[in-house]
Image (cartoon, rainbow, N blue to C red):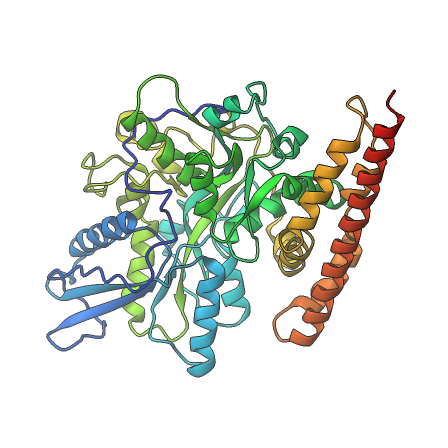
Length: 498
């Protein structure tokens, strides 16, 4: 099992801490190459254009564009036409991408001039499928036989094949050892997600807003599924009370740890791996950064791709999806070091996990050619994986995000102040503090949350606004009351001192 310190010499390149929140504006990556392309819509001058909306960083875009054209060049009949890939990005996370697409589709329901959505986990694809804004593409039988439908209960591709996971992501507890030790917390060695709620970390944890990031929402739903609704929400409230603040984008959480603004936070593994590798290249001696796969609480989730409704260049979009799923194409690109085998990156190690188990065959792909040292399909390496219920997560994604947003993010100032007051006023040896129990009591039962989810779905703005106002008032009333009681308790104990 991989725990605690992860050390790599893989050369994983390019600013993953700059990560998925790239510069605002459209970055056009022209991959002009003579390729014969049957059935593709050509621009003036004979070029076929593929338009892709993606949060992926520039290094991935460059490698994917180069790899796709090389792969396609080898397909019979596709040797001589020119193809231009146009990358669209809007400078935000999955929520921003969905709002952007929603605005476009409301104006032109039959198509928005974009061929594919590429990246962003699975959440946006669930929403797009629900809204009939994806087009199905079915893998050829020989390709489908190489990719399992699920890993530990998580779909690697949509059963109806409206979206396909092309690489895997995991979540780790990312730690800055230097900051931790400077605060006198060298004995804090987390093994579980609940360890982020340790009272000693108050003000030193970094966290994200699930309303803004799919990966952040995945982490919080993971905690709810591991611990159950009641205990899980207690742990989320504890994490929130310890947080220094809430980032809009998931890569900001990683940056907070890298720059020592926080001791720890939940991070995507790819962000953590890349940051650790860059640290190794810059410094010598004991590592500052660590990544922990929580014992028995590790989840793998696919990062996906899907063809958008009304894709202008449907045939080219289909081939792009096939490339990303093929062993000689995208699967090698994610896993291999540059210039090692056909299909490997040309310049940057991507440091992502492939969805095809064949890439972990040590004879065909020895460790020396791989940029990621673990095999997610081998329990002895990553520990017991969580049996994640994707359907359950999907059924409550609105209520979980809004409940967390109202009770923890929006009321964070009051929550943090109440927690500080409780900590200052309680006896050091106290184990069962009634104020602490009340502070972190779940805001509602699981049944109540399920009932509220109906009012939070898109299309009911007035109902949603009323529910959010109700939750916000309840949260702030609780936190103010407990803070006042804790401060009164503290004053009474000071008076009682001899």
